Length: 415
Image (cartoon, rainbow, N blue to C red; front, side, top):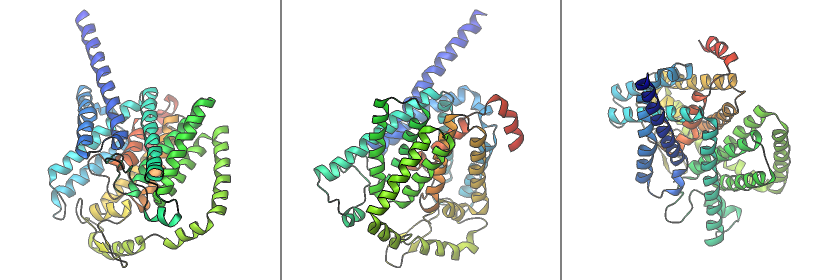
């Protein structure tokens, strides 16, 4: 009896250590893109601080089979198997089969790790809050450094041409492209809005969140990534409608008034954005449509590039729509499995909507689904900002659990 008790205590202590280790790793994975100025250093930190302890915990739980017994997980596993089949058998696939196997395994470990944190809402909330506040600090630092220290012009033509994507100092917070930067910071704007509408607020807390969100919104605005703008509007709107409390209604009202004022003040700039249109995406999508008969069934291969030269000049290597790019690479089966994954996650989130974390997951998934219409070029690759955009909400919704009274109903509904 004593031996068994001692073993249980040791196992409990090991789990506590691993969960603390994973907590640090998840924070680094979410915010480390900002305070690391070297991609290989960031990758090493994520591998050692997140993937390693998560793998150990997964092995300790004997692969956590109960976690994978849900329809969204089945869809993810089926999609992963299809990706590996295409990677291994399709002659058009880029990179080796081993590369794609590692990517799929890393994703599975990541989903498990985040889901384990979701089971501990208080701890998960602190991780999200810390990462979001770090993002807000870097957003304000970027605005100060770019427009205060470097004295960049705030003239519309200048900021439209030189869109924000980096801090501009020693390689920190360099996200390579304005679209990526806009989507990445936009995720944290949704997260901080969630903290406001679901938590108890004091004047100090409200003030801190307001300043933080303002910095994030200004940064996203100055990326001039319209995909990020629409994704942010969609994500926040879903979030506020899911909570439907006094704070959410107040935010909806304030946002509507501010939007009308902005339209009035910046009408010429809005007209210019309308003239810019989809910025060549119509040409890319038409090219994709012309190629469709050749790849619609089996795809062009995992990681295959969709090469196209725009009429105005400039080459592109992807479809500028995640949905179209996935279909191009993995065929009708691949895009079908991906859409099934999204549908199953939306249904699970709706069933679990009484849980505030599930509402956050739904809002972030809505953000990602809008973003993927015109942006996001790949989701099966090593850790990147797109993991924060898509795989974080996927993991959140995999981790939430329906209330006991709804569990049987959910099982029947998706079974």
